Image (cartoon, one colour):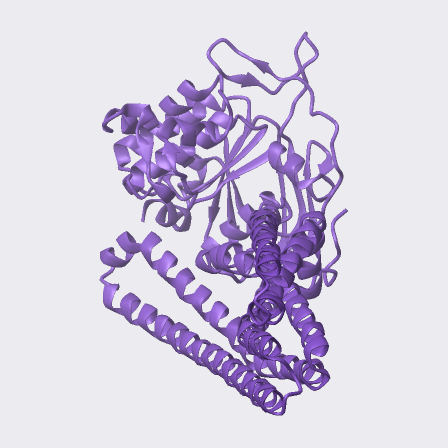
Length: 586
């Protein structure tokens, strides 16, 4: 069940990350505490060796206690080896788990998580923030083991000298409180650092993906200045966070040093007065030096926990982002069989084998963005052209049909079923919208056309219809040529043809194409128009375009103005309207 908005917060992110691996964490914590206890016993055993063997000259006692010391080293070594393995396992797997959680939310059919975030910012959350939260699974057991070391040292010192033991027991809590107090500014600044760094990464990714456009319009300098400003802000935030961390660690080091100096001073005075033995003094000094490590570890653990809380807040914001659309129903009744002719076309009309029309689309008083009560009927199997006097009308219509947003009002029905009542994946299986800026992914050109399917019976036909076969012929390895991220290794026209072939190969009941040929030449555009018409014969197709080549193969064209249908007719009849003619030929 999906958690409602507000159910995810930084505390729940941290708690879940720890609870998911509590078995390994408990085992690792026990072993690491055992390791630290063994480390704390080393100076104590050395003191015992001095008092019971070296001072008395008892060789047997010396050998016996040296064996005990050796066993202690074996125990602490193996405890650390297996304890560290368990907590590192929990750390790495928690990192992977958080990344999957972020990816799952981003891939949620209802969308919404990406709103207001640049791609680089999302990457920062999935990588840097996930790691900072996951590392809690390492630092919590390590911090607890450090506290165990302090406890063992305190008990040992109480046996050597009550004043020294009390000094440790009474002095450690205020020291830990100081660590938490000076760690709060680090937590605040760490969050700001991550936010601004993510913004800089997002800006950089945005600029890189649009570098050709920027060069084409001569906007390189303005883009560079924009990135420099964003990067400078991120640098300032990083420096502030680094200064906060340096101040935090410096304060911890100073406090630890003063604390240990007091212990050494008190122990030395007791030794001079004869209150403790030589072995006791050696053990006390050794324990004082040993405590530097655990106390530093508690400081580092506090710093990492402060950073983890800030990162957990950013992850929680993304996971708890409100969905852009509702869940709809989990499934829908099948639309019915559709016959496909030998030439690859499909028939939307009922025939003798029981097929019935599919792909009927109805819009009633649709309102979203610039759409203002749009009503439109599209019969099954019709190829409709939509010409928008305002490009925002076409974009708003595409977003509604793609179920990327919930309309502000009105209704969309496909084959009589309300689109918003269908689960997002079901709705998108019935109505596929190929956006104007469709992205390509790393992999071969054929992989991009197949779009994750093992195979498609319509691949070759779709490649020919979109003239993607011509694009493949110009590439070194044809269809098997590797495509760079976002299709950056291809020209604009090649990218459009591959994306169009992908949409055609999916062969949905309703296909919506938004300006699919803006980057191809006129001759290729005419060939593509004919290919689309042939392949989509008998299948409902909506072309959001002003291309005369595409509009010329449609059965019907509607003109949108001020968010409503302004004119309706064939392309040939509408060409008598000078305003329409200017839109599609100018």
